[in-house]
Length: 136
Length: 388
Image (tube, rainbow over all chains, first blue to last red; front, side, top):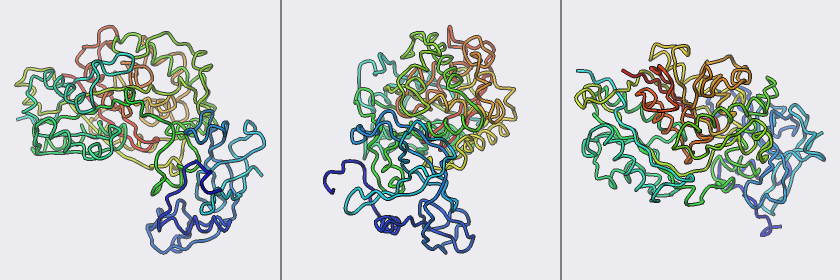
């Protein structure tokens, strides 16, 4: 698939590498603070809740609910033109943090705030896998 | 010996069809706007000893070291430089910072300037931001920027409070009515709520006429001491209170999408400093990147209760002749929106307080509130101004 995927890819850096490596292995991995016992996302060097550096990567359940979303009727650039209408959503993960992603549904018009969703992994290139969600 | 900060000059570039009349680079346009503001104040460009420039201008390199670039271009070696860029709210923060610097005696006369030629350059697009650093967790999902984030906020507000698309459309229509009274506004054709509701869908629930324009633009504001202003014999507009805050960059990091915490914080600080309440404000100029921006901001500033913004803006309350004069130049929705719009909020508030607004003049405008919003409901900066 490399070379044919025209959409933006993450520019992976040392802080984000564990997340994207896990995704490549079809795991949704997010940091847990061992001091305040709260997860966060996106991954940071210090816990944004208590500012501790005592963090550990943990696999998340991959389950969540839709906090809010939009249906893009116009594409975010030409690479997305064939996808409209498509959903960009903020998912409240079961572990607590909120994550932007795409929700794939049989009928985008039927999607609602509060819908339960579950992660799936889209291997868009050999190097990059995007964790997307589908309605449960 | 009053060193209280006052705004003493404003200037803005004339537009035709959303483009700078006579054309020009962002530096040329800022120079022209600065000259207009200096002439308005009755000072020389050489009297300026502080520069506040947000830059960007769609130009990497010089656009990122904006005060240095513009200082050289204008031939100014400032004692005070403020390159703060918190998005469209930058200019409100520039006035706030300038007031602190001037009142401290750090400098005497600050030029705040901005220009963009994005319309002429055809540089605006919905995608294409680089997926580096934290943007790698947002950009890969194809979210049209910045409308997608605002759309998600609108969706959430509708979910929680029953806010409707018709209520959002009320804002677009009322703002257009103000633009019809402003010869300088870009969009002046009549608009109805049905026109808004039948305009092109962009990102649910927002449609084309829920979105600000994409235009060029340039503006300048000059802040100095009250003593200087008195000596110049110019009408003074006092900087009575200000505040600023920001809460997130990514919309996914905004704790509550139906509540703008940055605007709540910045306006609380500003109201306390000015010693006034929302009831004391005669004219309100708030950032209208999208209709939902206005609704959320009015709630956050305390003009209505949280969740009641939809009801508040109904029945054309914010239109000319309504009880709540809002965005009286036609706003970003109908006047102009050159990437970062916040400087035009200040310019219009100053003109209203000086009674220079002709057909759109708000009777008895003595106290104005200006509120800029930047990013994706990310930053807020509030300035409260009053006339003599």
